[in-house]
Image (cartoon, rainbow, N blue to C red; front, top):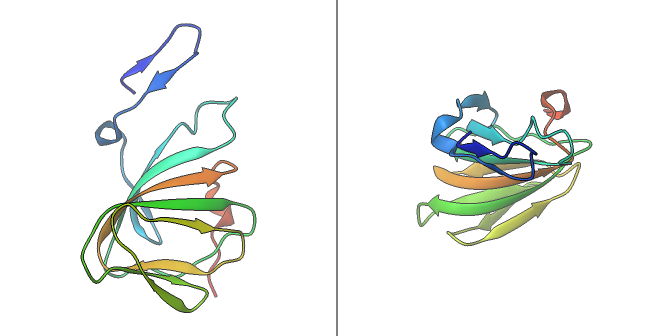
Length: 121
């Protein structure tokens, strides 16, 4: 974390300072999990070419595409959707999803991310 005010009114993070964690998508760097009063987490995720389809029962995710190749897609409940930088995707609980192609995304997760809420068929 770059900065937290003494009264906790704001925090500044640099994702480069957050250790990456393996996830079904590739590698996630998760911010603000320690902010008890914040009901969400923000992740910078590098999606690998072999991302694994999964779903969540409780969390809703918004993927904001930062970088990707011209042939990148999201698989959403079996449908392939072409995506590009600047696109945002709302993924509600129960939607099976995965990225296809290497990409970097910002993911807003509500409520906070819980690794016990990753499900596979």
